Length: 130
Ligand code: FES
Figure 1 (cartoon, rainbow, N blue to C red):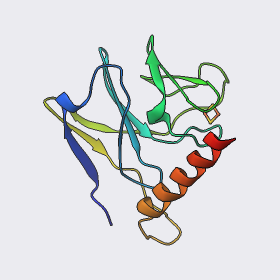
Figure 2 (tube, rainbow, N blue to C red):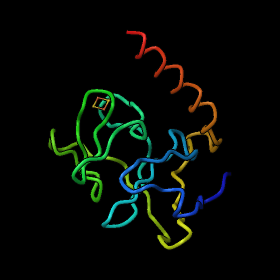
Figure 3 (cartoon, helix red, strand yellow):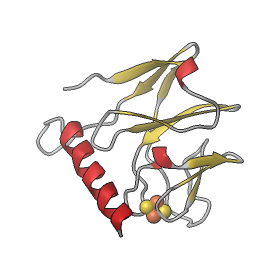
């Protein structure tokens, strides 16, 4: 099993800029805004693009895939009702930020994060070529 949480310095979280960290099957996107620190699995619920490559504007995170937007503070999709990001608990948001890691593959109990990271990178490369 991997660590139950990850930690990083708040200074490593620029305001309104998504930051990616490894964790779980898809990675983690962490966003610091003037309203707090928020974390989600780094996978869009539409087609799986990495949200950490998106932009934050006016409290919304725009997916780089097809432009859907999500409220940074709740994860709710503001374009298509019923879709939402998978939230992760922010356990500490002081000088050190601590975020809960998502669960790994529950069927096997095997941590699949690295293999999935490579798979997603290949999928991203294929999408860019299209
Ligand atoms: S993959 Fe995010 S909007 Fe399509």
